[in-house]
Image (cartoon, rainbow, N blue to C red; front, side, top):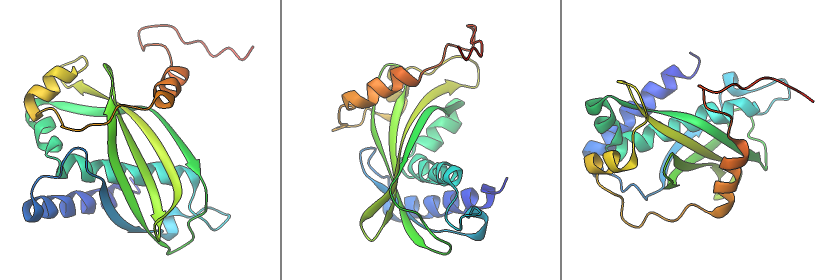
Length: 186
């Protein structure tokens, strides 16, 4: 609940930018300006490591709205869920520090869409996350890419997902929800 107001503000701003500037290319980098708030800070007086991922959701919402995908998802009863994410930290963001959240689609495979998010200050990366998201149907089941692209168009110039991202996705995948996944520490 603590990021809901920021999410709503980002979505409203994205709608305004969409009306003003038109659709954002699916291969473009989305950028939004943020500031580290007191609710983002941990006892070490820098942004809490878990908060980065919550704020990176804002970048995804901005991209979904500005590329037109949010409207298509709403119309067809689709939604996206994060299935894997990894983040690397380089520098800390302090209280009230301004930063730019950069987000872009880095590609897809037969089961997922991959995104990259960066927290950037003065052109320098402070943190970077790679996100693997699956598209699902409210009526049940996964949304295939052919169905997605039939509704929204296939993005031109979408780069190939780097091999290391595929390796990371394979290494971090858990069994299907229909399969057993016992917690065995041996």
